[in-house]
Length: 250
Image (cartoon, rainbow, N blue to C red; front, side):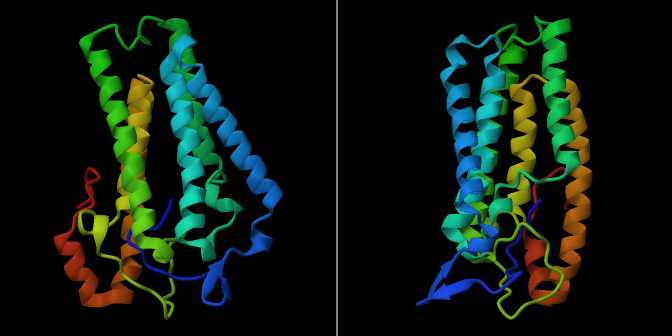
């Protein structure tokens, strides 16, 4: 989904005026940005407002978390990396696989509410309550790590893996990158699993865990192939001393 170590590069030359970097207005139609932000805001607000009367309030929390995630993707990029911000920075255009995954998650919620309504009860048992509490913790943890990775990397952050080393490529190893060499992946991984714990979705939780482990394993292997070319022994040393903290990925 995004680069996790902060190798910087520019797809196009950003607009620079008096030393300040500005977004490319051609790639940032203000009407589309406004409408997207408005819709995300309305959905977030409605989900939170209806929490006290919702039949399954966990779903409202899931929708609110999803809206906050996509808004923050754009906002943090605009705030800390304006030269690369574009409408796509909302990461709502993640392809069919992303929407199918979210659809699977929602379908499991409503199918189980219909067939096994007692299962979708946070207070049914200690185990149910613990799952939801852990899920909320993972939501907050994952969002913080993801956002902090983007803030720390700043202009070095990119939603695309770079295969060519540009003059301004920088390897970020400070801040949260001292703890994980791919904190944006780490945050998204645990945030996603947190959503499924909050929703009490056992099937989707297992499916997501397997798919994400495989996806990030392949993506990190591919990305680090180029990072080793770009930074050589410096990256080797960094990789050996800094883990990822996603299961089955060293």
